[in-house]
Amino acid sequence: MKLEIKSQIDIHASADKIWEVLMDFDSYPEWNPLVREISGKAEEGQRIKVVLPEMTFKPDVLAVSEKREFRWRGKLGVRGLFDGEHYFVLEPTDKNNTRLIHGESFSGLLVAVLKKKLETGTLDGFKAMNESLKKRVEG
Image (cartoon, rainbow, N blue to C red; front, side, top):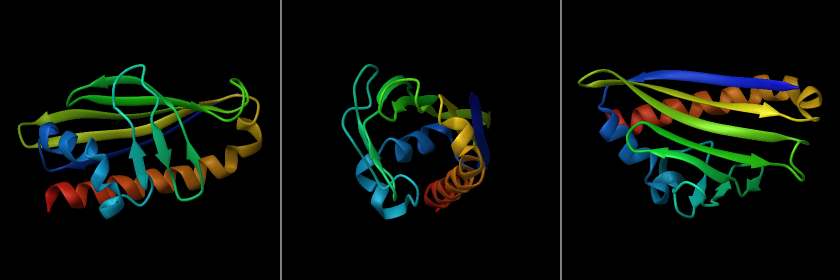
């Protein structure tokens, strides 16, 4: 089974400014209620460590397109059990405004069992992070 959870928010700032905050992993504990910590190199093919309030995992970085996209894929146990491809995409709407699209595509055997929790808790977490990022960037 597959499930995509997707959120978006418009931020009054350039993609450059948002990217700078999004990629400053050291500052995450100061503002990010969802992703408490990221360590490792944000480079394609690298493994990073992501700490959430309820879990820690080590996904592989799939894409880093400066000022445009950051994407990773993680798994629970063996591949195919519960996999997630998490993404942040920045789409400038004009010179000083950018739309952040933040989501995750889930797949695997456990998705059906976890569907309700994913649809509510995960989306709420994404929205909280989006709002906090907006506040941090806009000042």
